[in-house]
Image 1 (cartoon, rainbow, N blue to C red):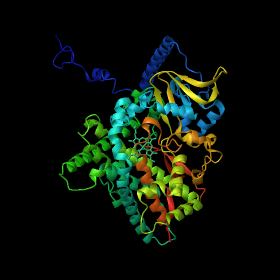
Image 2: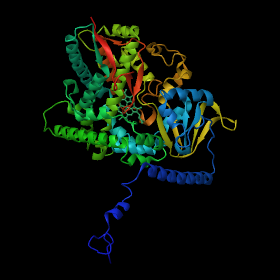
Image 3: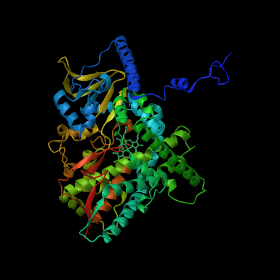
Image 4: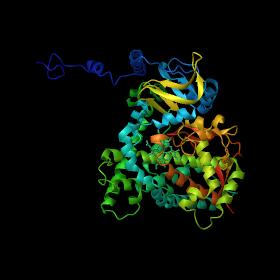
Length: 556
Ligand code: HEM
């Protein structure tokens, strides 16, 4: 038998040119990817139609905005829009609180702006509605098969194993970590102010909120000090800073077509390369930190701190309950905490300083509430429940600027979603339930709901912390989630770190506001834009990169 690939066979020696032709994967051009994608999509469409006819039941034919592109539906329009939540809110007014939005390649997704529907949707998280194939590939590529990736029973087990590390007792113990980071930042700012001659000085607050957030999650999450507040520049910061997703044509295509063709995410093109780099860096950090924590558990290292960290507690609990135990791979995949804890909190702190700089009266009101603490810091209990204006400011920032703007899931089975307010279908029928077929993408638009006038009244887009002190019976109270906002999501996947985030947010803000005043350089009307990063960040218009310079003065 001749081996046709053997270079020793004289009849079958393959020339370099022939070899090139035999390795088409390497030569896949953009048009090839598109052609294959369209072929696959057509095939999946035919199968879907065939399956739905075979099953017999019919989905509710919801109304919605018309498509503007055969290839991308309205995905391109939403992506280009400065604030997609305004479009969502407008469509809800026009088509009702459940409507259909055309997406790539003739597909669509159902958007729910109805409280009963949203509560029903979240109540079926991880069983009836699960991460979309695109999100699943993305999460697995980036973090591995941790709690964010898992569904159903596996998700429940991982959550239960992680929960003690986020209990009130655990967060109370971690509060000193948040203060330590905030005071390290203060020492830096004081020396910047000491060396400046003018009336206050311009400081890029976003950079410092990133430092507080990264050092805090390093110590509190993994028992490791990244040292950014001590002037260190660890590789993870470089990777985080270089993340500017969505800027190349290839990444644009992957973003728009990925929801229907998730395999595009596995190709080494566009942002996929960046995400892989981020994954490699996070994996390296998690490896190192876990190794250290394990050694400390075995008493090989004398440092304290690691055993009270989230991962430290997880490792300590290893072997204590076989039902809840995580595999080594699952513990590693909890590196998701690094990104989850870093991005969201630093963005929220930055927005708090921007909003308070826009409204100096409210900044002063907060300072007055905090003035009872001089020479001492609020305890965890005081932060949690004894400072109503601080609590209002924090929740108002989280309502107005949710770092994650929606929850998109795919139905694992046919479902009937109840509505509080009936909607009119394409045939003019009035329905108070929506029949959804298995495989349909359904979304709760967090940002649009949090900022909707229908729920929060005419001042919904304004920064008004006072609304949290007012016990008015507004429609927003029909929304579940954390304190009637969806910023931390809801249901089985509600943010595990929300109490951690709230303690850090409040501790850091209390130090900042007691010690400094903040002003936008060009006045309260300074334009703030979106900067594309892992999650969208604020930036002062015209700045190069995600910079938010504010004039900082010492409180006299
Ligand atoms: C302002 C700060 C934060 C916000 C707005 C926020 C928001 C969210 C949201 C919206 C989700 C749901 C994601 C999804 O279902 O796709 C989530 C999940 C999660 N968050 Fe947070 N988060 C914050 C801070 C934190 C912190 C500090 C940690 C940890 C230290 C953390 C850990 C997690 C984890 C582990 C999950 C996954 C939960 C699960 O899948 O069961 N988060 N967060």
